[in-house]
Length: 103
Image (cartoon, rainbow, N blue to C red; front, side, top):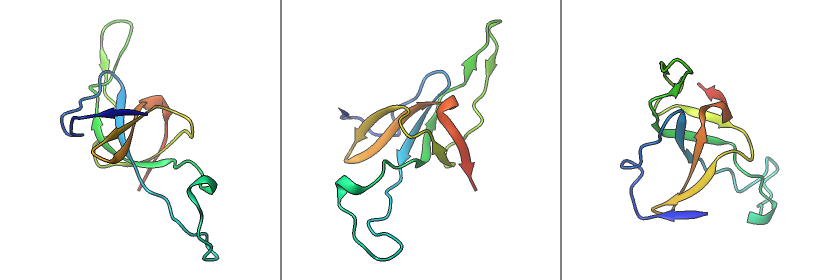
């Protein structure tokens, strides 16, 4: 995992990339059993913190991204590049790796 010495507000994604802060998952099961780190599934829910301008089409037009800063999103399990910024986990994803927006 890459560790950067910048803040998440100064990191601006390029193209159709999206910076997502990984949301922590529960430490307990529904029955109250505490889960160790090794037994937890990889999280798939996060909050968008920065968005690139969008992807370029072959004729040079820019198609803006559908997500915006503040959206809670569900993303593909093994997608993106993991980044650690100021002890928080982030993912740099392409827009196609985002599966849904949670409302």
